[in-house]
Length: 79
Figure (cartoon, rainbow, N blue to C red):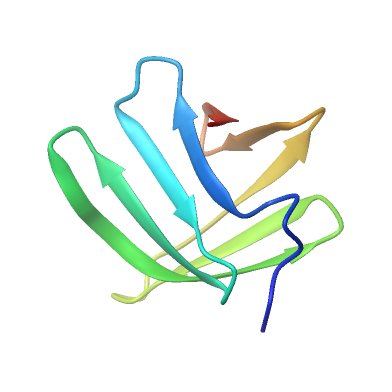
């Protein structure tokens, strides 16, 4: 699966604590603070909605609104 370039890349909270790297192959890596690989898994985007499946079985979702990712109560901006 490939993902449109509009969504791939690094998404970061304003304080820099949470960082989602959305890869073009449908995989993601989430960093939290100093933990560079806190979570890893796959994701799918349908329209402006994103679904995450962590490799440990955890699931989450979010939405892209006006170029901003809203996920689990957090706001992430593309860098």
